Structure formats: structure tokens, C-alpha cells
Length: 608
Image (cartoon, rainbow, N blue to C red; front, side, top):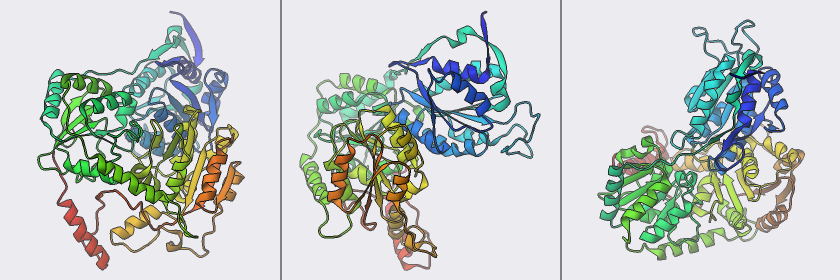
């Protein structure tokens, strides 16, 4: 057997550089890295040697560079991914939140944190967390509950099994998610005679599981027995590449469609059978269909509580649930009738079995009325009033085109965008599985790297921007342009509204309602400008629209800051959300909110 002598870190990077995606190119397109004593001498040296075939990018924060990698994988529909490496200690634990985000959203990313010495010779090393009762534990064990596969590389030959196992997970459509290969820092530098054949190029294919014949027949029978079926399109539609198949299926059988946060953009908003969103941030016309549906057909959705209105919006007597999902865990939720298979294959097989079977048309008048209602919400404010989030969205919408892609993650904007944004195909990117504040700017960077021809628009509130903005400097350095619309409502306006809606007093959410000695006077425009971005402080909607147009020719990110009214919500759509209200309180408002809460929990459907 022919061998080649390499350090373990060199072997890892050489192997990663020849793993191919089925659509062409590398599966791991590059590595985000912040070097420290636990990865610079081993992994850093190996990345430098492979820099021409495996690019390395420098981030400013371990969590946010991982967010960029995750956003890239999501935009690439899980067909390609990135790796992220850090040193041990805080560099590694900074990435745990990002790992959780990737896990919840079922997205592939390869985490390579440095680890303690396998030899234990210099223990305890700088930044080592010592478990007093278990010598095998390091800080990297924090990754175990938030990754799909965990391994600790404490011998160089471990790579021969660990790397293929990691890729098996990242390319598995059912178990797809993040993996962590915690790499002991002395092992990184240790040499081994690796088989040359280990480095032969390999193409990783994404399988499309066929349905079980009995489950397929039962699904067809359930659909034929229904009178008012409703399709709930989730992220699985997008990852399966089933967008056109779903549209064709809906048209062939005259079935209305609503989209989750992950599924939004699978169907063009202009398609008459697209009724927007269901649930807490649902459209009025979509939630009316949800209340009427006698068969709810989930396609690639995990039925998160926002989609279901905490299981109150699908409320028709005798309603049944059919869940088409690649993973049996998701397909069986709430006692649903399961069809475990690839979304595209499922729609093709069901469509073939249904033949010419068609349903009565949904209420298109309600859909038309909904868009007339939202047109009014989009109109610019009169006089000197601060704009609402809906009015800002309207301004951005008027300046968006078919190549525009709007993205967000947390705060007010995700709900407002789901209920109001009119998404062109592939024009919507929301991280709402984990709703992670700080994802936005880094996510926009990752999206633009994946889709350079897209006009990427990052919608972010002041709270999320303050949590994580450092990758704006990275985007400037890398000349990767996108537009950031930063809405400044001077606090956590979304949670402030929720706090008051559940009977609480305004407290610790808005800057003025938080403990302070000096009033807040944050200069967001000055901050973004200091990082090298193009910056506009818009004095109103007209200036926002002008800045949106000007940003389209930029070569670095453009940040448009606009003050907004923190008070109003979207003013349209929506459903109840289960946020527990105290049973006992000295506030009358809380006691009244509890009565309302109990009236809603009585409507929850706990089983199918």
C-alpha cells in the first residue's frame, strides 16, 4: 500500500480539498478561521499550504463567521458547505451557539475547534476547562448536544474514519446538520503515513428516498377523501429542489399553498394559489384557509409553533394531518399520518396517483383583499411621524426586484417580513428556527458569497445589530457588497410589545425603560462608517428609497439607518402564540392576560 507522510492537520485539509459536490466544485468551499494557540501551528500551517485549493477566510468573531458559513449552506440548499476553525477555550465555545442554530435548522457546517493535548503532558494548558471528575471532558464537549456528529481527534489515524462519517452526516438529507471534529492540538502536528488512496477525489451525492408503498397509498387515499386540503410548504421543499414540482402539483389539483418561514420563496407570491403564511405571523387569507382545512398536508415542515399558532389555527372539526418529510421523527409529530420520503419524489408519486383529481377553488377574493390591505400598510407616513416597520418594508419592497433576496433572523422583522414581504422565487432567507440575534450581518455575507448575482438586503433591528456586527468589517475587506437596512427603534421593540400584551409593565426592553444613568445616544451611522461601509442616515421613507437605489452599484456593504416607531406591530394577519402568563400576579393587567391565555390554551389541539 502506497502511503504519504503528513501531519494530521495537513491530511485533513488535503482530504477536504478533494471532496466534491454532485453539482460540481468542492463540497467544503472554504474554511473560516480565527487562529489561536490551539490551532495556528497545526491547522494554520496546513491551511496555508492548501490555500490555493482550499480558501481560508478570516472572521472577527467565531460565532458570526460560523453564521456566515451556515447562511452559505442554506443558500446553497445544503448542496455545499463551509468549515469553521477556532482555538480552544472561548474561541471554541463562541461557536456553540452557531452549532445550535445549524442543528435546529438542519444545516451542514463542519466545526473544527482546537482541543487540549491528547498526551496531557502540559496539562492544564492555557484556556483548558478541567472537569474535576472526568479527565476526558474538555470545553468542546459542549458541542455534543448541538451537533449531529461529534468526534475527538486524539490520534492522527482517527481521520480515516472521522472525516467520512462527518461527511455522511452533512450530506444525509434526513440527518443533515452540523458536525464537530474537536482536534487535539498536539495531534494536529503529529505525522502519520496515510494511504494515498484516502485522498482520491470523491463525489458526495444527496439521496432521494422513495416512499413506502403502504404510506403512499394511505396518503393518496387521505387526499382523495378531503374536501378542503391545504399544503403547508416548509424548508424541505427548498432543500429537495421541489419548488417547481410543488407549483405544478398545486395547479394540477387546484390546492392552495401556504409557506413557513423556511419555505417562503418556494412559490412566487404572484402565484394565485399562494396564500402567504399560516400561524402566528400568518396572512389573513392564509389563516382563514388553515381554519377551514380538513386535511393539512405538511411538505418538508417540522410544524413549529409559529406555523401552527401553537396548534390552534388548524381548527376544523375532524381535521387530519398528513406529514410528508424526509425524517420519520418530523413526519410522526402530533400523531400525523406520515409519508417518509423526499419531498419532490412524494409530490410526483402522489400527483401520478391522483391523476385528474381536482378540488374546488379557494377564496381568491380573500387573497385579493389581503394584498389591498397590505398595500395600505406599506404607504409612507404623513407628516413627520416616524415610520412603522411595515412602512419600512413597503419602501424596501418597492425598490426590490426579481433578483433581490431579503434576509433576517430575530426581533420584529421576521414576523413582519413573513406576513408582509412579497417574495420572488428564492428571494427570502430567514433564520427562524433558532431566531438568533446577531445572525443578520454575518448571514448576509454568507448569502452573498453563495449568490453573488443576488441583490442581498439585510433587515436588522438596532438590538440585533449591537449584538453582532463585526463581520461588516470582513465584508468590506473582502469587497462583498450587500445592503443593510438598520431600523432603530431604541430597544427590543418586539419583546416590549409582547411584554405588554401579556400584562407586564414596560421594563428592561427599551433603552429608556432599562436601568441607566446617562440616556442612550448610539450613533449607528458613525459606527458602520468606522467599519468601512457606505452609510446613509435616512431622514424618512423617501430618503430610504433613494439610498436603496444608490446602494445597487456599491462594491462594499451599504448601511442605511432609519429611526422607526417602536409601538405598532404589523397591523394585519396573525394568530395566537403560546407564551405562558403567570397564574398569580399583583398586576391586574397580568390577571386579565391570564384569563385570555387560558381561553386560548383551551383551544389547543394536543393530538391529531
